[in-house]
Image 1 (cartoon, helix red, strand yellow):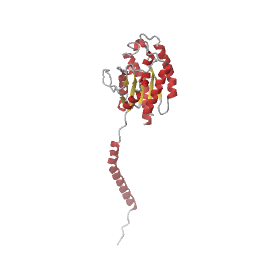
Image 2 (cartoon, one colour):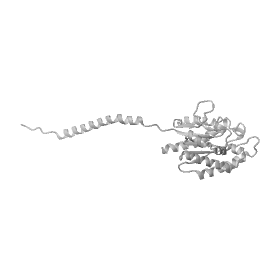
Image 3 (spheres, helix red, strand yellow):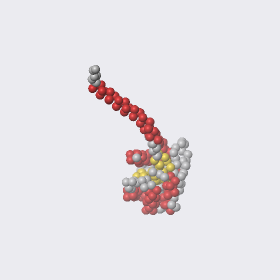
Length: 255
C-alpha cells in the first residue's frame, strides 16, 4: 500500500483561503450591528443663539432676517437655532426669527427688574448677541451705570450657562431730535466697551466686541437718527456675520 504525500503548498493555500472566508463572514455579520449603532447615534444639538436688545433688535429688527439669509447661504442654518420669548416680526420672507428684543428697554432697566434670568431659562442660549445701551444713553445715564448693568447681565448669563459666548455690540451712532449730546455719549460708551469686555472675558465664556458704530451714518443709514433703515440693517447684518460665524466655527472645532 502506498501512502500519498500531501502537497505542502496546497495545504498552506487552503488554510489561507479558509482564514479569508472566515474573516469575510465575520465582517458581514458585524456590518448590520455597526450600521444600527451609526443610525441610532443622536444628532448634534443646534447652537442656540439669542439676540438680546431693544427696538433696534426687535421692532422689527430685520437685520436679523438678513443675517439669517447670509448664514443660510453659507450653510450654517442647519446647525443653529435663534431663540427668545418674542416671535419674529414681518421682514418680507420667512426666517428663524425668535429673539429677545424689547422696544424702549434699557440695559439698566433689565437689571433693575431682574428680567434676564427668566429669559435665559426660557431660551437656554449657547450664544448671546447683545445690543443694548441706546435707551440708557438717550435717558442721560452715565457710562459707568451702563457698564455695571452689562457686568450684572454677563454674570446672570454665566450663572445659567458657564460656557455662554457673549457678543457685545458697540452701539450705533445716534442723532435724534431733542438730544444734542446723545452722539457724544454714544462715543463715550463705545470707547469704554473694549476694555470692559477684555477684563470680563474668560477662556470658557469669551466676550467678543462687535463694532456697529464704525461706517454707520445716521444721515443715510437711519430713518430718524436712531433706528436703522434698509441701508442700515444691511450694514448691521454685514457686521454681525463675521463675528457670529467666528464664534460658531470655534464651537464646531471643540465639539
